[in-house]
Length: 265
Image 1 (cartoon, rainbow, N blue to C red):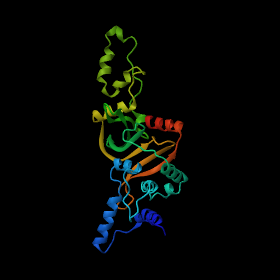
Image 2: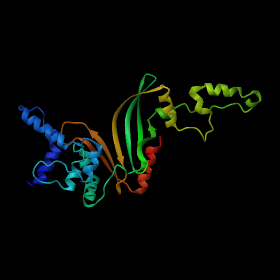
Image 3: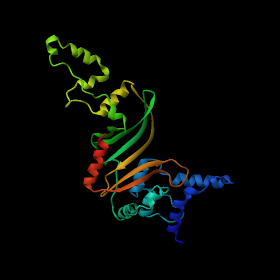
Image 4: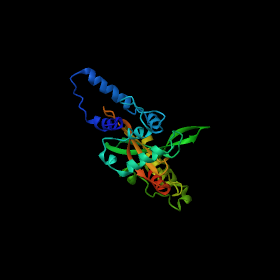
């Protein structure tokens, strides 16, 4: 068996090793190896993806770019490992000098959050995108809020001021400005805020209360012909941390559709 095969077998089968070792020294060695392999931060994921940081070898060999990429796959997902797209992607990137960068604009973060609304738990996905330039600096901005049901029921019904109300001093304007819950509904339809703005206004007024961020994933669209999703796997095995959870073969048109789905509620 070659060193390469031993490395791959260890990489994909060590997640199943029991941690009930009789000797603490062996247990500590496993923890040390797990810590070395773990992709602890997303910046480290970028470095390993670009082959500027090499995964720690289990022997004296220096891992190839292909091994580096394989180490970034979620090895516990048999569907991912059995998908031909996965290996097309690995082979493609192994032979190309394509890199990803923090400064790329074509990537998104999705924060899966919990809020509280009327004493009920409310799952909300917050979509963020990196904006800015090297000269002016960069920042993460909220570009959308997504929810399966909640956003479709936001209070954006049609409210109006009577067309003859001007003759009596716009008395209904006073009513409209005091109607805090439906205030946005009095705007011209062209000027009405997005459901994202309405939702954040409800957070500001404590009608909706933020509880916690459950998990984060990154959607990377900057790789030619491919889109990948990266998630954090917090587990005490070699294959842990920020890893590729899904690989999609996408042309430019498909990427535009994918982005529109992120932007759209």
